[in-house]
Length: 394
Image (tube, rainbow, N blue to C red; front, side, top):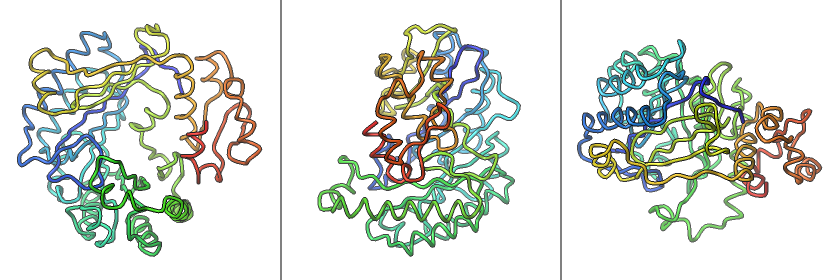
């Protein structure tokens, strides 16, 4: 958790909701289309940004990161991505070492396309491999084979990317421990700079929930997922990756700055269909005192029509109470395994240390789930293994 003001840099998140097909486990804001309206949608992204710059008076602030997620942003051509990246940069004061991330799916990229994205100003690619096992990929409904996921990582490096991330999923129905260990082994052999591991969640509005969710033995699933997570910790930490966030591992110097901004409570602007923005302060003040969150309409067509008609597509906003702001700052801080809840920053914002704000910290400490380092509060190894339960109880 940190404190932001008008002199602090911010981040920009641009959401591209289009996919070639919708995966049966996916509950993200995305939709399958035959052709992507990349020119129209890019125009809307930049027009929306111009409207917010005029409305919020945040032009001229530093820009630390750009993150283009989805959906499948790699369905957009390198020229379209380059126009988006350049347009965002020119409206702020970008850091000399700005991190610009593009999410890509293995089936929509090749060596030439990676070269185009690099030339377009992308500095980091996050590859949605999800697995290196063809059977698991088939269960997940992914369009690419394992060989294509491997070649995507190699092609990105060959194109010149020095910051490559790989996403993996565990807890897939039918996925055994041997398959998971093999996927982790392939990942560390490819040596991307960043690896994310996510336990599969089954949301009720997905086909996966209808297929597997109702009949699952939840206790057995949780035990198996805990074993898989602990296996990932051993393999990745043993290979030299730093476990800096519950689901994220990085080689030294390659933590995701775009995502880290969200977890540390920094300001960010969300552009595109369904995107969220957050401001902990505006103009050095706190109107409202504890921050402002807003979000766009989720439907891509409605989003573009709204932007073209009035420059914004806001679907709602909220300002947390002090209690809500404190709780959110603490929960996000606990996700950061390298820093935990920064007690001095917490006190600077809320007037008290976390130990005074949350009286159950001592009980968690006695259970061996939380660690007090001075006044900073961190998850222990034991706590990280059941982090969802702790965050819920917290």
